[in-house]
Image (cartoon, rainbow, N blue to C red; front, side, top):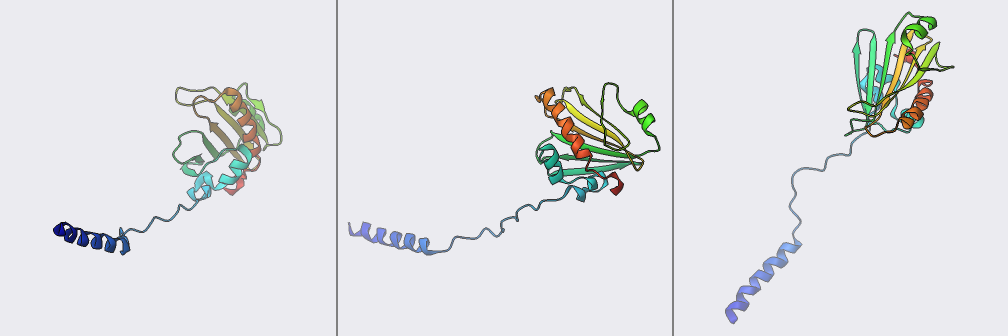
Length: 182
């Protein structure tokens, strides 16, 4: 019995001593929290967009932007991190066409004309595809010789009525985009 007590006593002391020690450090500090990045930091047509302005006019929340340029065309795509859709695309191209040519050659048949947006403008809703839901599109001939378009591609399962509503929201967003800043 004495042997058992003598063996238990050191075990209790060791356990008590371990409780007072500071926990071992892993050597790696916690990563800093992510810093929000502006859409404009992606360059190109993204310089014309702001995530907060997009959210204000469309209700969509985006936090990732990517830009590309091909000749005189500047494009920006914005998405939410970790999600493929919805997606908002802005394209701006330098042009020398006039409003009549825009109406004849650019505006799709069946698209609704929009007033008070550039020299000429339209809006339309496109049907769903195999990979996405319907899309809303607004195109306009800006007053400074630029052809611009906004397209919102919805996730699969989105109703066409929702895309129609989004097309109206894109019109209000298009009215605050200043293509001269490109």
